Amino acid sequence: MAEFTGDGTGVRGQGGGGEAALACPRCGREDQVLGVSAAYLRAKAKLSVESKGGDGDNVTTREENSALAKALAIAPDEPDDSTLGCLGALLVLVSIGAFIWGAVAGKWFESDTVPRFYGGDGDLPFGVEDSTTYLGWISAASLLVGPLLMALAGRAVRVWRRRTEPGRVAADRVWAEGWYCGRCGVVHFAGERAMSLQEFRTRVWSAGGYGDLAVRHPAV
Image 1: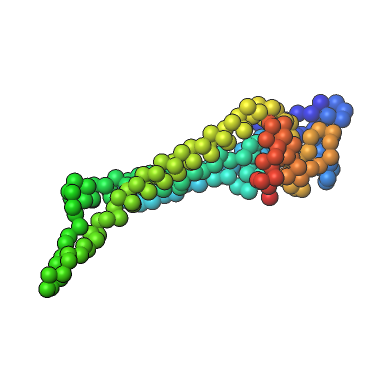
Image 2: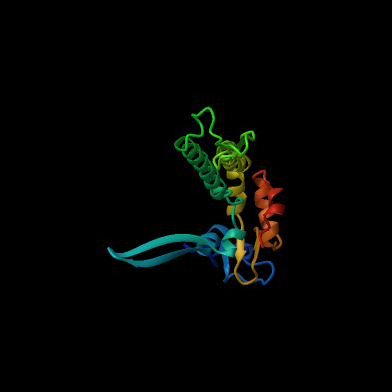
């Protein structure tokens, strides 16, 4: 019977044949074989950023996934639409600012804001367009586009959750049964051939019902 160490590495145990399931089908060895979950956690990196300020040292720790951790991910990353949402919020602020600017300039509350000038010798008056004429258009356009961008940003996250959350348990079950060989860079299941990271991703994501996303999000 095969035994396992705390980091997921298979070691030879007593009994016959159990350790063979852990051996990499490509190189035939098992000293670099880890459970996929252990390989994924080991590949995640925590980076500490230390900055010196007037009140002392501030240490900021952030976690970044390596290429291997991303390749072994159980599901596609949640879409980051923070830029789109921030742009939408900025446009809403522009709309409010343009409206206030026009109000202060007297654009919205005067019946006739276009200054009139008269030519010589009794010519008819002609109007000169005020520089605040386009504030209404800017305010209206920003007020329409800003909330639209914010809604689109939220919709992308909701769509991602509807696609991945229902089958996450099934995908996790298949994902946890895999073994990763650090020497060959391949994954295998007990008694099966070695497969590439992309093949492993397709199999896991297909078990979760979102296998079509593996084509759009290649492992390497």
